[in-house]
Image (cartoon, rainbow, N blue to C red; front, side, top):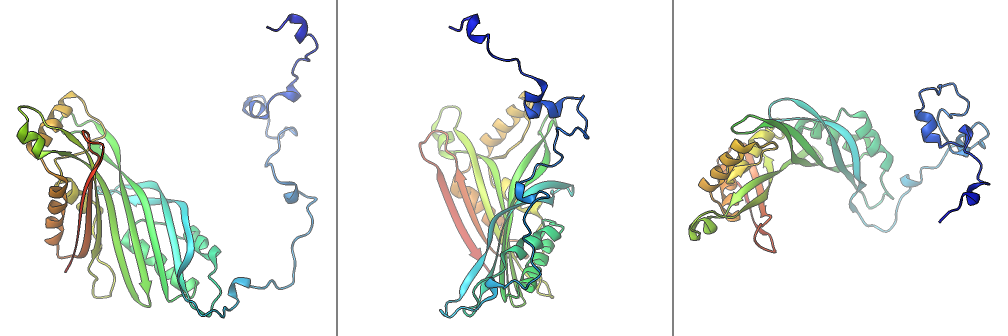
Length: 320
């Protein structure tokens, strides 16, 4: 253990030695206090930095040619995160974070593409997460990067408010959404994606048990390609309709806030609507096939099993 004599030579901490973060939060500090730097910078960014600016032309190395004769299907940037705005099924704009992958094709005779231009395009765009916004960015990529082909993949959580079935208690849930768009010449293709979390109750468990049945959460992934209008633009498919197709094919939808009356309701709702993972996929597919706006789709369902050490899944695809 320490003795009092061991601490005798330790000087008291002065204000100047206090942690920087504590002094910044002190209400007595002033913005003009010379002890507090306004914007900490690297030494090379300060007033005594060496001159790194030149008036001489700088070669565009990325614009050099290439003699190997190999065309690149895509080159670009990935894992680009930016703030954006999505509109929920009720028409309410909600801020979110979008993750983008942007690329263009590179001809065999070109060395590469200009990566910084992708970020400039995202920075200057309003980033409205809808089919019209995706088409706009695709066309801008094609034009600014002087490419015949461009590809844009976007993933984001869309937040929406939902009421509990009995008490009407409100809470926010998030739906995984996304777009994958391509442009080649004047031809544009756009695939819309949603990942909807649902509840499923096992029909076999219900049938063979004297009472009760096991249930679990599941995830339904829908990837839908719509037809094009007379101008060759993809027809808009409201996100809410895709969410509805998924939830109506499950035993019960997911709610963010549940009181006891709500929990009773959803327990009985799921029990009255048992479905296997295969049933959910077929239920979604049946609904999408009846929609004349849809040209093709893929449906994938996965159950996060509650009584097994593995998960169950099923999938299908379809086109007209």
